Length: 402
Ligand SMILES: *Cc1c(COP(=O)(O)O)cnc(C)c1O
Image (tube, rainbow, N blue to C red; front, side, top):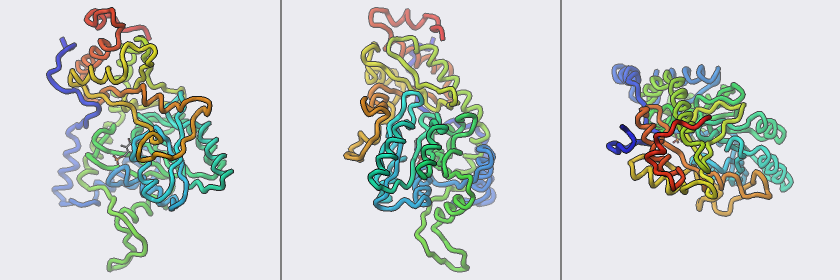
């Protein structure tokens, strides 16, 4: 009996530790490598390189720091334009502004919820006609799903604009069988506490071009020139990952395949239990995509669903279940008021505005028990089932056909 057992809170995406992390952390203590460099950092970079299929990696103190470094290395300067997915977390866009450049936001498409190739092409054509310098295109692989790179990469290549892939949410995902984190001139990963694997806080800059990751490492360690004394000719940062945190990451990375499998299983169970309810639709997975389902995201069509997104969230919260609205698009943020946004279809409202208005993320942590998963489903079904039917009978119906 788990249906209304509200004895403990269920979190959206808590860290999932195995215990194996301790071995690497204890190594750091034993050898006194308590610093933002050391053997765990080197090994974590090597192991991530192998995971992604022979990429080069530079571990950083956060995913945001990696975005900042990548934009600097792409030459982003005051007055430049940088294209960026609108449907994302603010960390994707903040460094653009902080470098004095202007973000121009790109809508999502319905098929992937990620950057719309049609909107991207229109933006690039418009900005070229206006004579603007587009220095980079920041794509975002949202909720564990990669972008339509088979369409996006050729468009960016045609216009000579490099891609920076924000794969913070998509480690372990593939697009046409190729890992997320390998699609841009550079890519970034995040190991924040809520991501699919964590270092408590941390990130990674990834590139096929070793000169870029080497330069990132130089900039991230205060840009110290080779000399016996402290010599500096450019301005650097303190952006490297701690050897202790990297030890956590090494233990976590060993479990990645299991973490992906469990998150996908959680998505499949939610989907089987809820998708037949009126107005409920889950984030689609195009045939070319294998999402990690980092977070299970769904939308409630206000014309058909039996409750609103906010009412569903309130029902879950009353049972101590954490949920979260989908990301509020950047072009709708007060921070970016007045910035331009290119819609997927200029004749319609932007896709990402609807995805925000109707979207919610359900608890998706890989450590969630089956009993907790059923508890979330039971509360969600009660809120979403047609009002006339008592929720107690609803929850005992067999799972709807797929
Ligand atoms: C988490 C996240 C980031 C930032 O990563 P941090 O490691 O928290 O700095 C950037 N972009 C997206 C899409 C994210 O989800």
